[in-house]
Length: 377
Ligand code: SF4
Ligand code: SF4
Image (cartoon, rainbow, N blue to C red):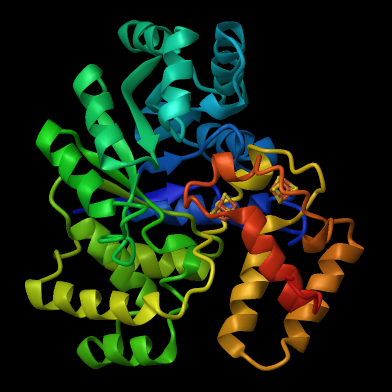
């Protein structure tokens, strides 16, 4: 069960405030360790790291290893495309940025209802199938953050899709909005392999509250909370790959250690995670995974650092008290040029691309209340 995939969306940075400043030497070392352990799947996308993820995969992977020794997955950013020609141009540019003449896996990125209609209107599904037939795409699929009913409809109308990428983790498994279990079951029904994204829910399941940490430790003292989360996703039959957006060598070393030849979780271990999910649910204020779609796929007119503000807000809620530390960090981000949470104009452009369906404009009022000390009245 060598199911670990390397997600190139949370790479190590030389400047923590600039997503384009990727630490290439460290990324190369991580790639070397990943391949040396026998894993091959590298996942990137057009807009990751402000458009710098694909060229980084080109330099750290493609230019350093024989083409047949690894698999590359990238995605067509439907949400950013306004015509057939633009989609074609992005596809060709991606090949150049990566330095490849074919994609092992190619996905329609974050296909929600509106983007599915757009892909049909712009004839981009036919285009992708032509590329599949010509060999420039070896496997054609899509990532989906929509409902199970929508997913069922797409797979019924387009049975030629070969795989689906889903958000699956033990916290969202029974969540009514995310519908992890229901979506997974739709894929099983249609016989489609699943690639898992957000198995650790953007780090949430690595930094669990202390009582949950104790619960997990009481069962397996040597398993980290993050490893429980990855094991959960990898244990599901039909899951082909579990993506992990690894940001440093420690995370990578831990992941390749237990993911290589991993045994699926037992029913008892699954039941422990069910209890853990119930305990965590009560502690999360804003379920932001830090995916950055709201700032990379959408351009906030007020230039708000949405995921960073939500992370600070969640920390402030967790710590309670006067949130002085979080307020100081918030002011630092503002001083670097980001708009204030209180300056959100409620245009809701960010909400249209948020996979977690967070009502961002409403939550910004709460953020300004806590981090700026403003009243929400
Ligand atoms: S709703 Fe607020 S945070 Fe979202 S894009 Fe508009 S101004 Fe920015
Ligand atoms: S608010 Fe939504 S889109 Fe933005 S980083 Fe968080 S989960 Fe992603």
